[in-house]
Amino acid sequence: MKKYIFLTIIIILFPFIAFSQSQDIVKKAMDHIVSVQYENGAWSRLKGEFPPEAEPTSWAVKVLKMKKAYDDKADKGIEFILKDQRPDGSWNNNTAHTAFAIIALKQAGTGEEAIKKGIEYLRNVQDEAGGYKRIGKEGAPLTIYTAVVINAFIDAGLKRNDPAVRMALDWLMGCQNPDGGYGMPKGSPSLAISTAWVIRALVMAGVSPTTPFVSDAVEWLSKTQKQSGGFAMMTENVPEDPEVTAYAIMALSKLKDKKDLIDKAKGYLASVQHEDGSFTSNTPIQFNKTPKKNTQTTLFVAWALTEIE
Image 1 (cartoon, rainbow, N blue to C red):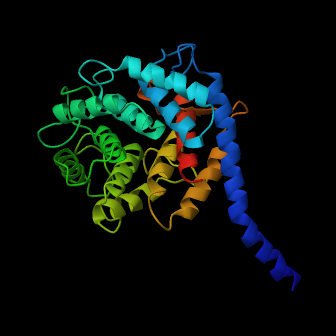
Image 2 (cartoon, one colour):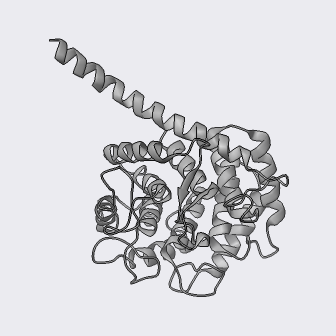
C-alpha cells in the first residue's frame, strides 16, 4: 500500500517539479541577460566580442516582454530597435533581423508603423519562388530565414491566405528532404536547426501536424535527441547543443503529445547551464564552430522555456 501511495505522490509532483525546474533555468538566464545590456539599450551575441545590434536586442525584448519583467530594460531595447530601422523598412537589409524586430515589437505592443514598414520590406524582397534569402535579394533562399519570416507574419496578424505567407509556405514544404527533415538551402542535408524552425512556422500558419510536411519532420527531429535529453544538429556523429535544444523545444511546444521529449530537453538544459545563467554553444555562425559561453544561446533557451510555462 505504501508503495502505491509513494508512486501516486511522485506522479502528482512530477509536473510541478518539471515546471519548477524550467522556472529556475529561466530565472538564472534572465539574470544573465539583464546583466549584459549595453548602455545604449542594446544587446550583442556576446558582450565584449560582438557589437550590440538589432537582432539580439529583438530576442532580448521578446523574452523580457514575455516574462513581463524588467520593463525599463526592455523599453530601452525597444528604443534602440526603432532607431535602428532603415528607410527601406528593414533592419540591416537582413530578413531575419527584420522578422525578429517585428516579432519583438508585436510582443511589446508598440511600433506599429515600424512593423508595417518591416512587413512591406519583407514583401518586396521575397524570392519569386516564395522563399527568403539572408540579405535582401542576394544569394539563395534559405529555409530558416523563410520560417522566421513566416513566424513574424503570423505574429503580425497576417493570415495563411495572404499571398506572401502562402508563397513562403509552399516553398518551404517543397524543401522537405526524403528523410523528413529540412536542410538550410533546398536540397542540402537535413539539420535540426532548420527542421525545428520549419515545423514551428508551418504549425503557426495552420498547416496540420498530421501532414507529412510536419509529422515526418517531427519524426526526423526526434531522432536528433540524445540520451541526455539534448538535441544535436544532425542525427549522427555530433553532440547535443543547448541552442539546438532550444529551437527543438520551440518547435515541439506547438504540438500535442510531445511533453516527454520537452521534459527530457529541460533536464539537459538544467545540467549544462552555467552558474551565471548563461549557456555555451557553437551554433551561432559568427562563432566559426568555436564553442562560446554567449548571450544568443541564453536568450533562445529563455524564449523556448518561457513559451511552455
